[in-house]
Each structure stands twice: as C-alpha cells, then as structure tokens.
Length: 160
Ligand SMILES: [Zn+2]
Image 1 (cartoon, rainbow, N blue to C red):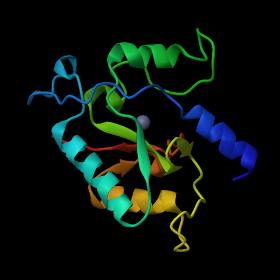
Image 2: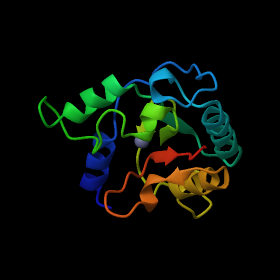
Image 3: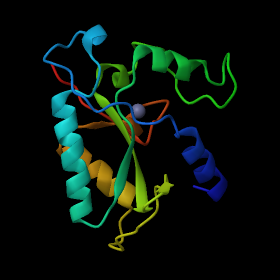
C-alpha cells in the first residue's frame, strides 16, 4: 500500500466514538439490542489481552451501533457531507446487532494507525495480520476475507 492509500484507508475507517458498553439481555431481537452481545464482548476482551501478550496494542474503534446511528453513517457522503464510510443502512450491519467490532493498532497511546504492514513487535510479521489470526482463532470472521468490498478493520461473530 502506498502512504497515500494508507492515510485514505485510515481516514475512511474513522467512524464514531464507541457507544456504551452495556450488553443486551439474552434477546436476539435487534430492536431490544443496545450493546455488544456478551459473547462478542468476551472475545473482544480476549483479543485485546492476547494481542497485548505478543506486544501488539490495539484499540476497538467501533462496536455496537444503533440503527439510527447506522442510518446517519450511511447518509454521510451521500445526502450529508463527508466521505462514504459504509455500504449498509440501519438494520443491515452486524454492528446493529452487537455482533461486530472494528479495531486499529495503537502503538503508543493516542497514536491510532491502520497500517497493515506495520511490525511493531519486530517479529517479521504484520501486526495487523497477527491480530486477524488471533481473532479468527477466537471465532471472528474478518471483513478482509469478504469478496468484493473489503472491510479490513472489521470483525464479526455469527451466533445463533
Ligand atoms: Zn465494522
């Protein structure tokens, strides 16, 4: 990736402040969901711990998003100002069901990067891909594996 592409990539994926971290009860009805699914939250916390164990600091840039927030995000770059940051409307994103998170690397506090080639723990492997590998072991599906539109910071879980 070129530097320009990386800057653009990072810019495109700055979404919004993380919403509240409260977990839904045991309902899977989207309208009742107000936060991350407990299993997703548990695996998210494990991802942060396991990556930290190998010298990679990550930040969760986005988790649960309400339908209203999703619609607002969808409007951005279409009917409101800014860059297009999402392809889906309210109710269509796994973020609306508390089943998805987005991550980025944070090598130093406050320095958030979306550099997929960065090797901060100097083990010869891309930190980004090391995070993805651990996430997959925890049961996450990675947006970078999607055909067509790829969402590299995105991780989601499929829970019945
Ligand atoms: Zn996402």
